[in-house]
Amino acid sequence: MRNPSPPKNARLWGTAALAALLTAGLSGCSTDVSTGFLPSDAGVTNKTGELIAFWNGSWIAALAVGVLVWGLMIWALIVYRKRKDDNELPVQLQYHVPLELMYTVIPIVMVGVLFVFSQRTIESVQAVEEEPDLTVEVYGKQWSWDFNYLDYDVHYSGERVQLTGEEGVADELPTLYLPVDQNVQFEIKSRDVQHSFWIPAFLYKTDMIPGRTNSFQVVPTKEGVYMGKCAEMCGEFHSEMLFRVAVVPLEEFEAEMEALRQAGNVGRLGDELNRYDTEGANS
Image 1 (cartoon, rainbow, N blue to C red):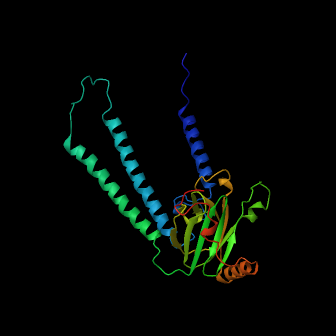
Image 2 (cartoon, rainbow, N blue to C red):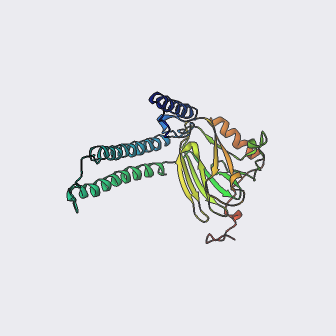
Image 3 (tube, one colour):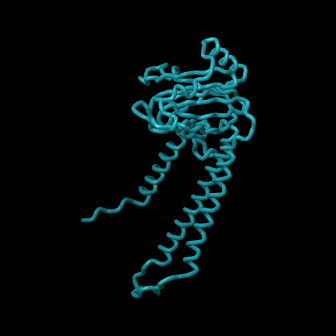
C-alpha cells in the first residue's frame, strides 16, 4: 500500500520552518547587505567603497541574468509541456537565426560591460600617482614579516609565532602601524618564496614575488586593529604567517616609530637578507 502524501498544511509549516532557520542563520553572520555580505570590518579605506560598489553591481547583474534564465526555463516548461491529448511532435527546426544571434550578441555585450567596469576599478585601486604621506616597505619571509618605515628610517623584524591556541599568543603577532587618514604607499617584496600580502578589511591583496616589487597606495580611514595574513601557500607554517594592522592617530603612530628607534631598530632591512639570487631563483 502506498504511503499517503503529507497534508498540505504540514508541507507549508515545514517550508516556513526551513525559511526561519535560514533567516536566523544569516542574521547571525557578521555581514551586512550593503557591503554585499563581505566581512563586517570591510570598508575601512578610501578605496573600499568602489570595490564594494563593483562587487554589489556584479552580483546584481548576475542575479538579474539568473532570474531571466530561470524565468524563461520555467515558462518554457509550463507553456510547452506535453499534454495528455498531444500526440504530435512540435515543429522541428534545424536552426533559428534571430535566436542564435541573440545568444551570441547578448553574452558578448555582457562580457564587454563587465570588462569595462572591472578595468576602471582595477586602474583606480592600483593607482600610485599621488604623493604618499608615508612609504612602508613590506617583506614577506618564511614565516613572518619585515616592515621598513622608510620615511622614519626605522624597521620592525618579525619572527614566527607558534599559534598554540592559548590566550594572549595572538598579541605577539607582528604589528604593522599605519596613521589614520594618511596616504600610505606599500612596496611589497619577498625574501624567499612567493607569498601574498592580504588585509581582508582593506579588500585588497597582492602577490609577493621574489625579485619583483608590487606597489599600491591606500588611505586608512577608520581607526582599529585588523588582521592580515599570507594568502599564498608558502610552506609548512603558512597558516602561522599572520600579522596585525593597527590604524592609529598620527601622534600615536609617531610614538610607535620613536619606540622602534629607541629599541635600536634604526635603518632599513633590505635585499641583503633575501634568500634568492639576483635573478630571483631560490637558493
